[in-house]
Amino acid sequence: MSHLWRLLGLYRPHWRWLALGVAAALVALLANIALMTISGWFIAAMALTGAAGGAMNYFGPAALIRLAAMLRIGGRYGERLATHEAAFRAIARIRVWLFGKIEPLAPGTLERYHSGDLLSRLRADVDRLEGAYLRLFTPLAVGLVAMAVMVGWLAFLDFRLGALEGGFLALFGLAIPAFLARLSALRGRRRVRLAADLEVAAVDMAQGLPELLVFGAMPAFQKNFAATGGALVEETRRLDRLSGLSQAGVQLGGQWALWGMVVLGIPLVGHALTPADLPMVALAALATFEAVAPLPAAFLGLSGVVEAATRIFALADTPPAPSPPAGPKPVPGRCDIAVSGLDFAYGEGPPVFRDFDFDLPRGRRIAIVGPNGVGKSTLTLLLAGLLVPSGGRILVDGQPTTAYDGEILRRCFAVAPQQPGLISGTIRDILRLGAPEADDDALMAALTVVGLDGFVAELPQKLGTWIGEAGLTVSGGQARRLSIARALLRDAPVLILDEPGEGLDPPAERALLAAVMAGLGDRSLLLITHRAAGLDLVDRVVRL
Image 1: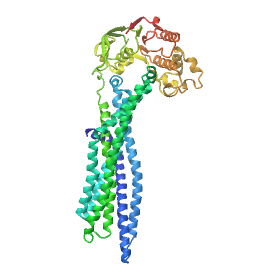
Image 2 (image 1 turned 90 degrees about the vertical axis):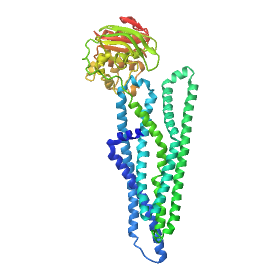
Image 3 (image 1 turned 120 degrees about the vertical axis):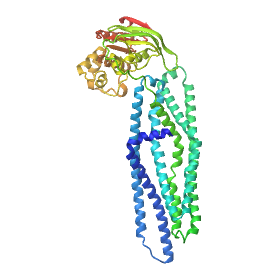
Image 4 (image 1 turned 45 degrees about the vertical axis):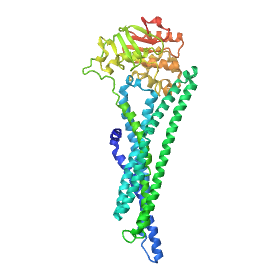
């Protein structure tokens, strides 16, 4: 339950909206109970008065009935407005808070999480926390307050009436739903985990579809996917059965409370009750069960909310990479790189590097060559201080990378990564990520180096052309060239090109590398590739 208290702490900045939502829901509920209660008394009193041939003032009760009806309508509208406003504000804050917690974990610490699992925590699990307020905290607070008000009122008429109603409410509205929720707690948590597993599998299928088809693994994958989905459906079905049973208990409790009031109230007529009061208390007992009607679903959903909160807080509490030193070194000058005895592995996995050495002095061109998966891209993260080696040393200007603040160290590098990482925007927007102050002439000069100047010049809006979500409207080779142009615009001493030839044929790749190297000046180049094109242009080839 500590996670629920922590969750309430995240809701605290929006407590006014939260309280307003609870108040509006309480007004709507009490108005509905009052509407049925007063109506029951009014109809009975009018019938008794007519049978006796008397007269009564019906304006007062009629006005109260209309007031209750208007309060119910206004309360329902206010409840929807306030509770959803509160929920949306709270969830927006939680998403921003969670992203702020995990952003420092990228990329090193987040490598241990599957991208589908991260997506599930950021989306589905956070959405479940929205339900914590709408379907757990609010119904529970409103229900308890309404129960206390109605039981107190009935006890004021006669203690036995209040005790009877309180007993039925406690048994059918609280005890039985809580007992069934306790029985289903493991299933509720398992349903959350199965939903996360299914999302992970969906991401795997979307991202790995070509490999699954090429290697004939799709039937086995589909079988596992269907098994996970079937298990999720089965857990949901069992929880729904318990929910239906719990809801039936509430309905049964309401009917028993009504007849209990009739049986108990008949001897009280003429003493604690008037004849018209008997249907009033009976209907009040039945109507009060509306206060506990949402509680079975709230209790049954509690385990899922706790599991979602556990997953979110576990991610948020993941310790980041080692913090910068107390007195970080100033900005490196030449950014000469020396790697000696480098060891690194992801978690408990096999070593990616073992006793690896290479040097990259200022102005040199070096190629790191090896098959996919051998650790070439990991080397970029190690050089930039985004991963910490488990052994050996990485020196920049004679100082270990840990001696620098991470942001200062990364001023040494301009990287064109293996995945181009194009944002949804214009060509100008994409290129200016590398140099925010660059003018259009500088942008076109970089595009000329990578051979895209002619392509951009023919576009209707030139640099202002929108290229779609993640560069949807450009080819793979053009996306790669845009990524390289963006890196060239960043005036850093070391340029890192990670698989720049993807999407290009060997002659085009060599021509691109030759053009890039011709304009480097005294900048260093680290070429990471598994292809042979352009290796004759570098000073040294290091094979992994």
